[in-house]
Image (cartoon, rainbow, N blue to C red; front, side):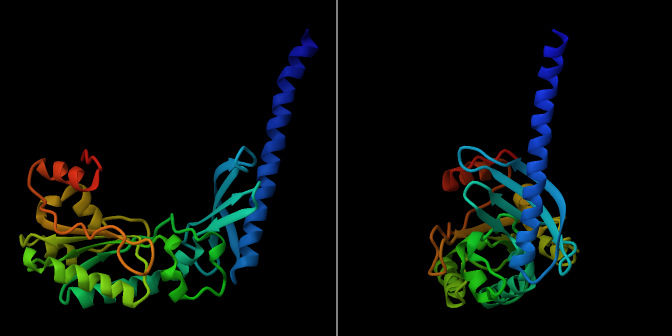
Length: 267
């Protein structure tokens, strides 16, 4: 009886050790995949999902840093059964160029003062589409790059200007071959809050004090209008713009948001 009990304890332990070794081997292969794919050297910094096999082939996810971008938290995903890989290395490679392009678009459509919040999107994984020699133009044209931004624009635009501004914004993206998965532009209500945003120092990488988050979750009362759009190609808006939404004080703005976007906002 004692032998049976010992065997029943040891067998799952050995099985667990075997799966751990298998996962470690796959994780090393994922790092080597990145070393071979890009002109950079990668180091494993974090282990996430570890399912080496399953009905859909399994899912393995790790985070790596690189010599060129030591502070980056680069996501690598692998399906061992199907042999497919995803990664968001190019999001970091083209961070500055993407931010500059968004700044140029905002300056073109909203000449004057604005605050851009471009947070690196961890969902920007381009599967087999990304290569070491993929250009910036190809990157921003690829829908799976999942480029998103938020911005605060100084007050001074009336509802009568809606169609003109929407058309100009869409043309600015299309003319550049830029597929922006999601854009949210808030219009300052003229209460002086815009000056506060201009003087803030933002931690773009870690997402601290992003102006978009200030509006979205806490300070919506400072903004009286917002415009939201989505694109699934660089040929035009696929959803929206959702026109100018009045951000009412109190709780009524949540009801209007739910009516327009079908999403319940609790806070």
